[in-house]
Length: 413
Image (cartoon, rainbow, N blue to C red):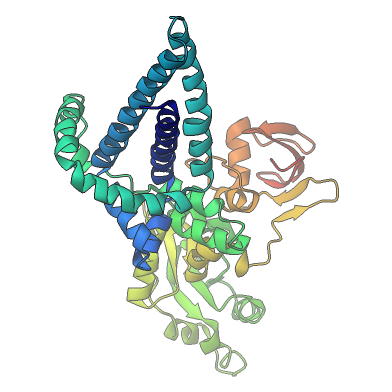
């Protein structure tokens, strides 16, 4: 066989080697979720690629079979060419092997694989048609090779038939949403992340604390009760006797406002308008409570601990805010300053602070920033105290006798 033909065959082998190497990387680099989307759109190449990737053991067996055969054949050709050119020099075989290795590394491995990793679809979809045909032709050989491969894998506890790459856990899905900022507004990202967090959130995480519940004490004078009704910013109020633990019911202010100016208005008129209070265990998941609100057609309930004592109040708006966040509230609890620091109301929940600042403060313990600071310091810090709370430096700006009121985070990490 003339040298020109040998060189021609060698070049063809290098091209085929580049095809196998690049197509392997391209098919394995395909985004599985984009691929399934293209399959739904009836993309022919995507359909072929998806079917091949359903059995990666068969596909990889075919690829490596072709690649190994071509590389060995190319090495043999290089040796024959070297002997024809330099019959008297035995070292030329080693030199030809080295040169061929360098050429194959650059032209048939690194270059096609890099290109395939950057733009997998233009190579993967046409290659899928070729591999579909080759797999039918060489299936007996591929099946025989995979028989031993699967046997070895089962010995180490891996079952190829039951292994799937298409499932995502919650944290991986959250990462995908976070990285989608170029195609999705930030507020919608927060909404989707809020939905994913519903499973781990309980009503205790989002409730209005007991000391902040605005209600009507039936033991107060009728004048005070009427004043509280008129100035209340809420549509419903808890009605109790002396203590919120002795709640009588909930009062819808729309029903009572038309009566407060009547001469015969009294406490009994309020009692007649009350609806039965709903009590919610403090560890109830948020998504469960949303379904309960919907089925019972109510909008608020009192959160109680294991002893039946009221710990707080939760409304349907609180549950929705866990999803949509700042879309329905004006965010006055976190204010960015001109120097890059943040003034934060210490009554903010840890979950909301994490969401606003994109932090990862622990949520298993205290539910508010005030509680987290007190637990960290094991005391109520004095005004002007500076600490590093879970890698975030802050300064206590304001406090009262029992709680931290306002803090300043020196920079938003």
